[in-house]
Image 1 (cartoon, rainbow, N blue to C red):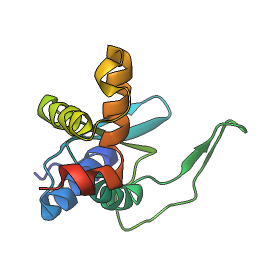
Image 2: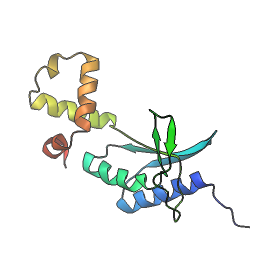
Image 3: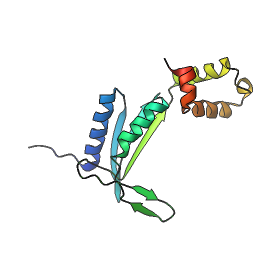
Image 4: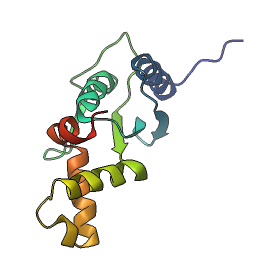
Length: 142
């Protein structure tokens, strides 16, 4: 007897497969909850240009958008040929090694005030530059 996947598990499997074709290592999970379901994609150290490509891939698996001002879910992206979920979340975090690399690049470029910044300021700067495509091109592209 063939096991049939739930819609959210099928969407997660499809996303995982597409990311694998791109050579992207990701943890993809799915869940269901009252009045909905979701897929979450966990990534690490993905550059901003690749993130745009990943978001383009994953966006087709979300069948709509939530409009908070009206407290309304608009089903404006229904595609009947693929499994879809109510929400797709993509999380890209820098690893400890990437944080160190960004910090070293900021120190090397003498970013104003970086060497005297408070720990929470350093963390915020590192995360901002982690998402900055120009910074990646200049300092992190290997």
